[in-house]
Length: 129
Image 1 (cartoon, one colour):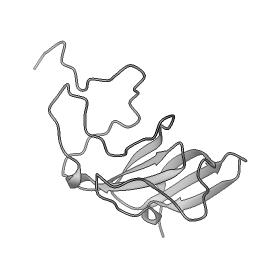
Image 2 (tube, rainbow, N blue to C red):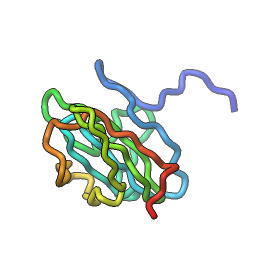
Image 3 (spheres, helix red, strand yellow):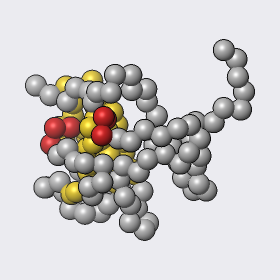
Image 4 (cartoon, one colour):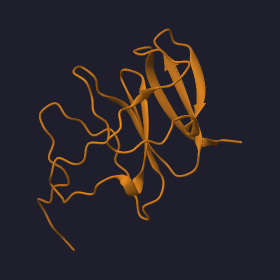
């Protein structure tokens, strides 16, 4: 069907889209990492659905000056490359991030200091063994 002018989400000034993916069967988890270096994973069926052209649903609360560094959709556990601000690279499993409720806060992972992470790169091609 042909249509024009259909909007998916209403963004505020300064907001950005970090992850856009199609979830067809209500399975999997959304994994989020903040610029503070905090991690959170939420099971997809727990996320409140909203109608088109609204502001969406908050999955992670952010303190002032913090934003989402990485967001990814996980259906099968895989590795993530964590790059520190000193440019050291380590790997963690998506399973290392505990599942939380939608209203819970993001948490730091053991082994990573707050504000020490520069980048997190999902590696879905590198499955957990």
